[in-house]
Length: 292
Image 1 (cartoon, rainbow, N blue to C red):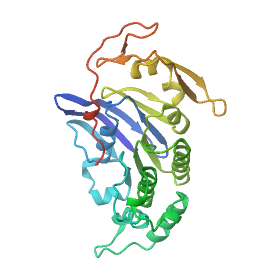
Image 2: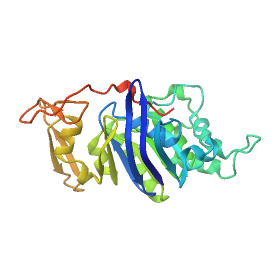
Image 3: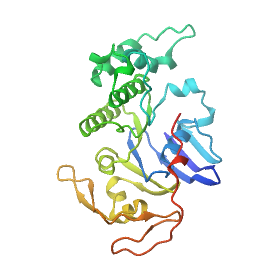
Image 4: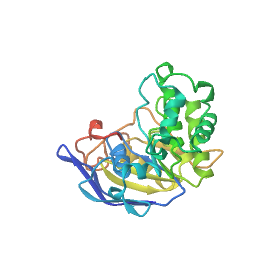
């Protein structure tokens, strides 16, 4: 499904991604986690083909990502961007229908099953009663759900989510990720999601990719990745990791006053009861390029 080999991207005199290699099989829900500025959004942009890379390769569905036309790729891949949809005069239904653009004919006519699919997506995401409302009357969280509905209306095999729970309260975070997981499993689809909440990542993801300073710091199922040692090294905090009482997946409890600054060359510096590791310049969050 997705193969990255030696993927590197440089900007501003430093590498945003540095020799990233991994393979994700179809039919899974994968999480990308890491500190701000680690290159998570840049990785999604490279996978989707909108960000050129300096070295390495990305293959989607057995082909180089560069070999796909945008229209052909849009029939198999959809992206939910980090920022919510802008406040416009378009209605919710009109925006969700835009997800069917890759299937329109040369005269702009819609495909036969598009309308029915859009209605199902609106119903699934609880947006049917808002279908006639304009986006400029919706909250940021409501517009985020509309953006997800638009992506689902594309009916893609692969969905890339860049911090999908941003602007959502905890109830809607769970609701949205429940919907994404059900949608992913019901159609055998593949989802790759950038997530900041490590506890949610552990609950919903089959495997995790951990980025730090543009490098792949760890990869594997949540139980193998979310260990105190890895969290300490990547995020510079001293966590208490406990199994979830219902699911058994690892859950993190943070300890106030024991956060440590992460360094450019790996490890963390200072802090309670820990050794001092090599330090360096903290990566700037501005270097992380959001999917356009």
